[in-house]
Length: 133
Image 1 (cartoon, rainbow, N blue to C red):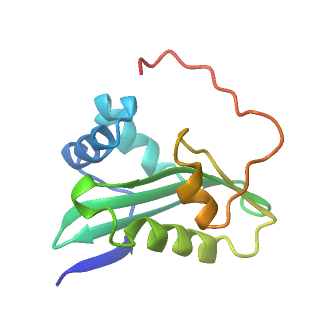
Image 2 (cartoon, rainbow, N blue to C red):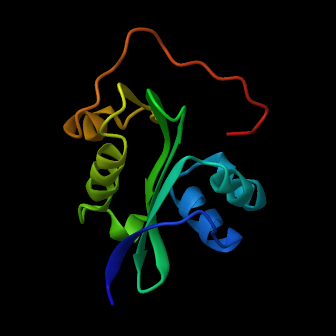
């Protein structure tokens, strides 16, 4: 069967925990909350390799003008194979009629995202969180 890309919103908590912790995201410590959150997202795309969750992209949107890409993650064993790019391209296709696609990026990843067409916007994103890093 190999690698496939599929829209889905129901994930096993264990696979989300593995993916998010492998990327160093503190949210991976809360897989139950992640699973619930993804069910509420506007668009979620998974990359699966023979059933294994290899990557994930998730975006929230207002339905018309702006989409916020919050998640774009790939397991370390699958990096360098074009999966992140493929996920991003499918997101761009899905939101092609929107006026803006905003990426919420981790610092240090700007080079990768700029290759996908993202540009640093004016100002600095801010967040208020109790979640430990």
